[in-house]
Length: 261
Image (cartoon, rainbow, N blue to C red; front, side, top):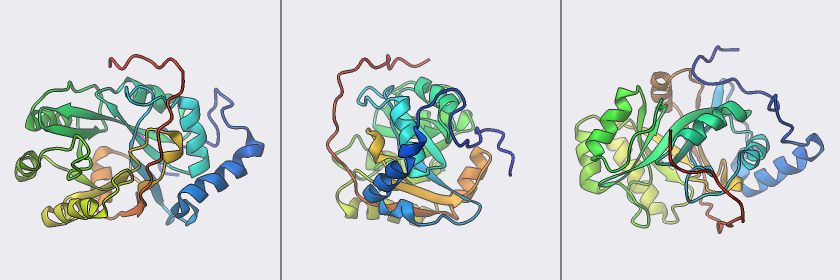
């Protein structure tokens, strides 16, 4: 097995908590594959499945708990999940220690011109920066600059002129070419065309705010040990998934403060 210096290795079950009751795992797996049929297909040997855009109860607009995410991880067979809470990273660090899959610490941060995701972060990046400054701060941490839902007018997408500026400055590593919550496929196609035109990595994610969304859209790619290897291997990967945007239930529960550390 390859050593993974930056990400925890996958375990069969979390060592400290009995989140998943084994008799119910086959049922949960069947339900996950029923929601997202592509999860039932085999992944190439030496490759991993990565959901590059997922939210937790630290996100401010989501109440999904670590326990719910862990059950979804086991059911879906996801190898790596990028926790990209809104303007926060503290939840991602906690989940990295708790989940049985590997976790990439990310942040979907609001700039003055729309949202940018930073992956492989070591600390929070404040909201309200210019897109260029935000991207440079991500790079300063050795992180990956990832542009989510770039052409979706129903989201806080990065303005087109800002995307063009970042691309021209070489400050974009990857573009989300499949967001499971984007209903108009033409918008995902526009994102793919931009990535292809400029030779950028192509990412995909569920943009999940409920546990059941995990794996709705993902990237299958060669395994990686670092942010640099992730960026390189993303170009050899393939985007898999479908549109899935179920109504979001709001559970009567207390969620942690979204004020990041």
